[in-house]
Every structure is written in C-alpha cells, then in structure tokens.
Length: 64
Image (cartoon, rainbow, N blue to C red; front, side, top):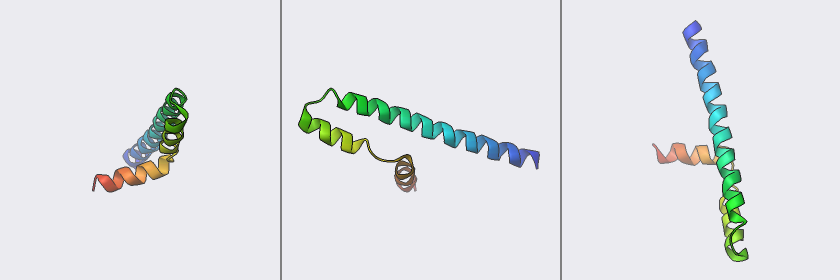
C-alpha cells in the first residue's frame, strides 16, 4: 500500500513538473517570437499557443 501511494505521489509530482517545464519553454519561445519581423511573429505565436494537454495528447499518439 505504501509503495502504491509513493508511486502515485511521484507520478503526480512528475506530471506537474512536466507541465511547468513545458509552460516555461513556451514562454521562452513566445519571447523569442518578439524578435522576429511581424509576418514571422504571427506564425511563431500561433505555433506556441498549443496547450500542455494538447501537446501531451500528440506526444502520446506519436509514441504508440
């Protein structure tokens, strides 16, 4: 029972960490978009607006 709770706690913490890392990377990408000309900026921002949940879904589908 303790082992199961420990594993669940680890997975929960890991998922939160992954979301945090993803969101930090996206924020950095959006900042980098500000350095681009207007036409490229719009496409860059569009590319960085994918939610973490959508990213995870696509990642899981790609690894199947």
